[in-house]
Image 1 (tube, rainbow, N blue to C red):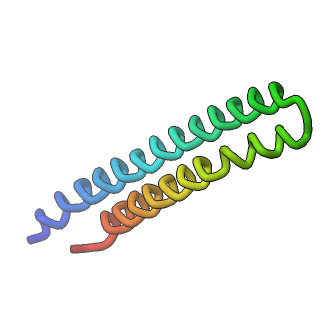
Image 2 (image 1 turned 180 degrees about the horizontal axis):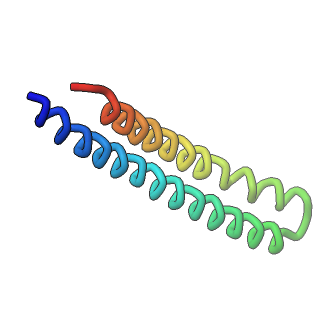
Length: 90
């Protein structure tokens, strides 16, 4: 019985490490998406001919940004839920 416990701990740690790595990969991708969106907004802002056009263009991008942030948060919650599940005993 003790042998099973000794072998189970490395598997739990391995699963936890894999889950944590998945969270890190997601966050890295989310940061990349934020940076790409920021570059897009700056490019659009530079093309604006006035404050009204600038505001309209930025507001047009808002729903897309909001949807991406919601999706990122959903994925983040699921990954964290899975990671926490790997830390709990069976």
